[in-house]
Image (cartoon, rainbow, N blue to C red; front, side):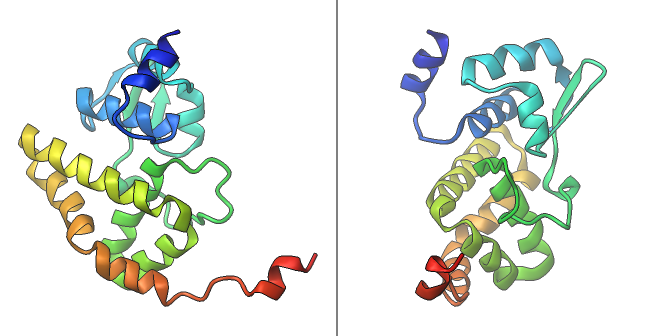
Length: 171
């Protein structure tokens, strides 16, 4: 019942892992929290702490839980082979790649996850607003960079060739 209530009250359609991360971030930012608190929140959001950890966005060990910052995300990440791909992860990988490779690198990521592009932009804007209100200037700046560069990132993504129709029918 709690999952249904939380889903109804959600202001967006983010996946359950992203919902967990968003609400955890509102409470803890990048700081450590207790596993019990994370477990309660994860259940309410329809996910599990271990699942969010498997998604690669959360540290969880010894009763301590913390969200990973974009600088801690792996450089060898491939969104096409990622089996658990929350919007939270896409955004933070996008920030990491944007800072290292600019709009063209970020465009490659966006091209690989086209269906989740709008949700990624919405999350960036939401996190920018949250960080601004909380006085987290450095974090706000990272999200703002994505928001203000979004059209250039989209343009770069549009230049990435998609699958050819003939490729779709070959086995």
